Image (cartoon, rainbow, N blue to C red; front, side, top):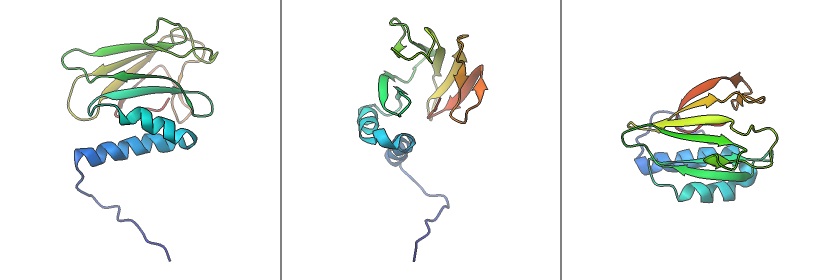
Length: 141
């Protein structure tokens, strides 16, 4: 005998939503769950953590982004050591691969990403190559 979970609307507090969002991110990378959960646990509510993983889902670089208060915030991600989020020793990543901007506002953090013209491009989690993207909350690339 199995139990079915009620999929109807539920009232959840912000802390419950945040915990569920953290667990959703960690479940994407099940093999590295303890590491990813520890990385996300220290992030203040409203801020975001960017985690770059290797092909096995284990973190190789991370950076916390504070929620912008007035102006957008920009981060360059790439292999170059002067990038805000440097991903060394990965030939799939260009020297300056992606410009990620976060925007002020209420609710989940809003992101825009722009391909900086590298060979590999930007590939979303569903395998689609795109020149840029907009997202609210969690993003998997």
